[in-house]
Image (tube, rainbow, N blue to C red; front, side, top):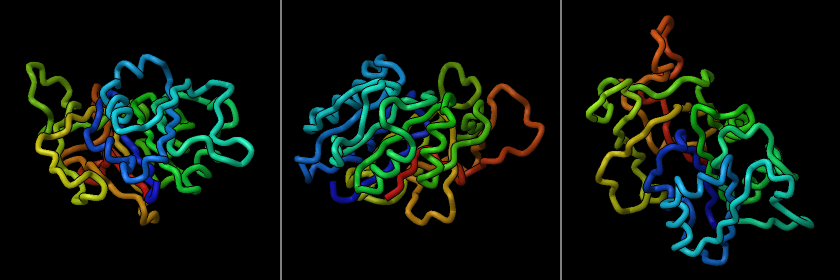
Length: 235
């Protein structure tokens, strides 16, 4: 697929429009995509995203993440060109898939998309860490923004955020400008500063912080402001 990408989305409950740019339309033969899910219901809840990939010619193979028969390669040949992990709560992959196999898949020049939520397992966190991304250590923490939250009839805990702080890169998000803010609700993550290949695509605002939305802060949150990334990529 030419340039390969690892894309991290810190919320599986929403779809971001620029995710569809993650697979290059310039190489139509590299279209085999393995999609690992926690539950097949995700095929319906995220049908708009999956259909957008199918309309562009990608061949999606949906499997449960703990399927004992899944494999990324056979007889030394990779079976897929890209991997989508929409299985944040998986504790152990099935078949011959593990963290090492996924990292080798990426190092071999293949694309990977990871979506996580507050149920992100240690396994998913380990894959992310190997790629230079660290999700908030508090599994109950969410990104909160009392200034940049999305106005609604019930304002609630201000975890539904309207964000438009995108990276300035046509290569990553496309040449067509994203006019409307993205609605985000989920966990935040930070980038490993020693990894020069990992980039923030969608950043939180300076007024944001990561914490449990229903608890009073007894200590300063570990993730604050624009240091919080909501979508990141590794090239």
